[in-house]
Length: 493
Image 1: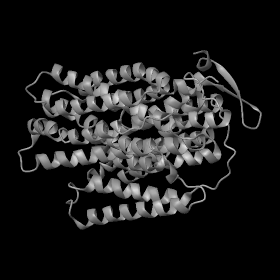
Image 2: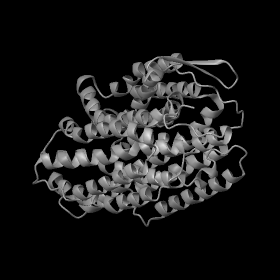
Image 3: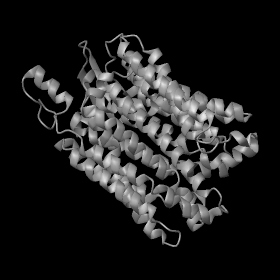
């Protein structure tokens, strides 16, 4: 582990030395990633206070939705942007946008101002998950990639639980505006660490940025997310606005594919989808994101309505999931990284996720919380085996020049799946509660029934994982072609 525990120096393509302090760079990148993930959930618990202070109760949901739209829609763009201008420069710019938008959010005097600032914050946050995923794969050797990507998964899992806890504590102690102001010192720390410690070669390519492709995929993403957000709640599924938005999303997606076939430097090279590994990994990641968004978003509500827990206690009650996720990610990651035998682990993870959703569907408020905790352990084990290892196999299957594009694509489809899953499962919950008396008891009974809809989706995930090919990764193929000798499993020559 000496190569990751101290400042290292490596030759750059132009012959100059590239020096980096790996531990400090890692902390800076993971801190940015943590801020991006936290701001997906930290605001939720403060929404009543925000509405009371700013008014505009009808638009309160957009405080969260605008952020998710901004981050999901721009994620795929940042990989190519960093190919052109460098990982460090783009990360620093993005976190600067995030910091400014956080300050504007905290200072907002109306709901419209807050939603606009949150949209800008989401645009900055889109880079804060994608670029660390790329940069960490470049500053660590390939045989450690599963371990470090496991750490990024742990950041996401911790943020899922820490967000509501931190949001509740900050709101109670100093007011909701400090939910955003706290990002300023933490964001600046991340910026300074990355500026001082991260040194990776700036790509030699000076290809033009595919702004047309970026515009098309952003517009298609926003249209699709609005269908999921509004369908079944604001508008009926068969209504004109929903059908129109769905049609626009499909048209924009078709135009994006048409354009990418012709672009000189495509935002998302369609050749990625001819790779047998990526062709399965990308849809599997979207399915996994939908399962994660559909479950982890509504489980705190179940704990509150079924057991009378407060928001803070309900967040703490998710710890069996978080701790198991972290443990499995850290234990399985090194084994996968050294053996390269991903498929059996991923199939096992998908089967465990299927079991977890079957158990979630059987939950009943009359059961002890201990039963729920055991189900959360099962769920954490399944997601821990899958989430970041899907990123790793996508990176390993990509050529060096397509690493950023492949990483961006994986993070993008996972974020899109998460947002769509949360929205669709939310619509199912609303439909399940329609016509009833409502109240906590009805909600507690309805949530397990809604989560049971995740079972067929999890079965699809099992099928996809079983279909993964048994092939050497792209980097090994390139090394063999260039030197005539394949690299050793530990990454040495």
